[in-house]
Length: 216
Image 1 (cartoon, one colour):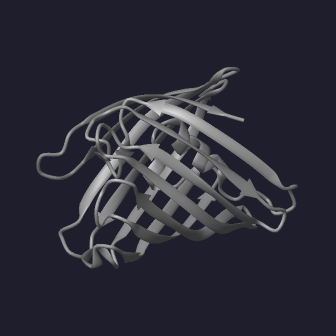
Image 2: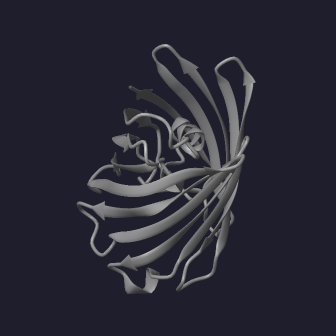
């Protein structure tokens, strides 16, 4: 965790590394909190280009089951996004697999809540995920899918480059490609990140997002 909707620099890297955690590990709880200059969502800004604060926790069980909640501000006057999730992860040889369900609730946005099913896999530095909107306040959004593939690679001690390419396939509109490229550096005082993202769509912006995340 946390999946494509939290691909904001260091949280994206953390999500990649979390895929495929062996079920033999003991029960673990991880908390995170971060600040970012923007909220990247499928190559676009979800916070109207305002800075955001994000945070949450995840509880993983020895059986491979995991659950938790992630939250983010959405900029001036747009309230907050709260995303509870539950899933199951396991290893199939060298491939880590996880699947589950997450629900996106918005405190101040009308008719935006939706529930998504997700399936993700990683193999070495490579990862992929697909999300499917199972139900939504906006019924036209039901059946929408997002595909995402990417990779992360440590290029120096505690420094990682990451990137990915995705396709947003809404049920009621034309699809669009999106991509991101960034770097994250881990220190004893947290993780600093810089991410570039964009979207192949008329009027789309190029986003350059700086962030800081603390996990404990």
